[in-house]
Image (cartoon, rainbow, N blue to C red; front, side, top):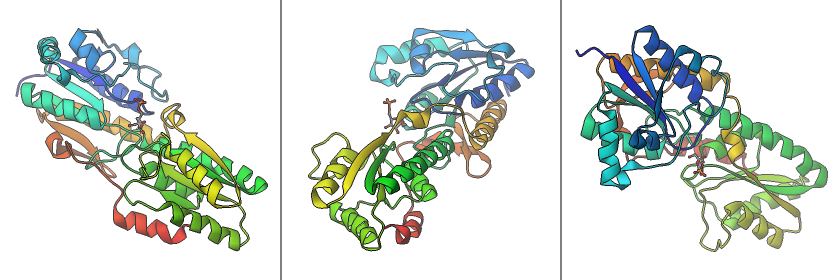
Length: 327
Ligand code: F6P
């Protein structure tokens, strides 16, 4: 097997807590094994433009608990232009491997470069937790933060006898909404995987009212859409609907980017650390085109191509285990 001498690493897509823990683990191990690491700036933009710095031990020192990414990130997609692909391939020429830490958009790019160039390792990250076959860095922290915020809304909802419609991030899936909603004792969770009519939501709120509970928390994932919805935010649409239909004071709250910021939970730090570690092991083993899938422990052999174009959605068993507790 060819000795690994020089490797690149980048973060791509939305930032999230835990990226730095993964970068740190990977870079530390690489440096200890005498491997040079190029840290590309701002995701694939840095690869196309040849913007990188050679990472030293001091660059990754003290970053374990820090949110964001020391490398910077972007949603830039080099596949949109043949010229960018050529420039990226030329800039990768001196490397023995590239580690891509990314989400569902980045996995497509990682896969395409694996097909063209053959030396890509992928680490999954996204607060949405929707990368197929694995848990993702950032999700655990997002659930913790969302739970704490919904807890806080509870007190005002109860004191003022209000309905809060809380919209949470999650473009295609309802993982954050269902998990944080359940953990914080929200009353209705509306997620893209299992559509629920406006009438049904109102019914849950009214059922609570009949039981003497004059307040409710309705958690909805941003990716939910209704046929009659004209508002950009589904949460605003539902809040207006409930205000119109029910004689109850309603409020809308959006929990967005705060879920992606700040310090990672211990769980995310540890998972990210393991993924960073095993990304290096994978490339030492020459197992390119693989990702560090995590399902309680790192399964390091999952081919990237198996996860491309697939979405990890909330399974029916989980949703229907939560449903009896709505309302
Ligand atoms: O994929 C993670 C995510 O935070 C989604 O939940 C959200 O819809 C999206 O990114 C926002 O993206 P951007 O940072 O480009 O606004």
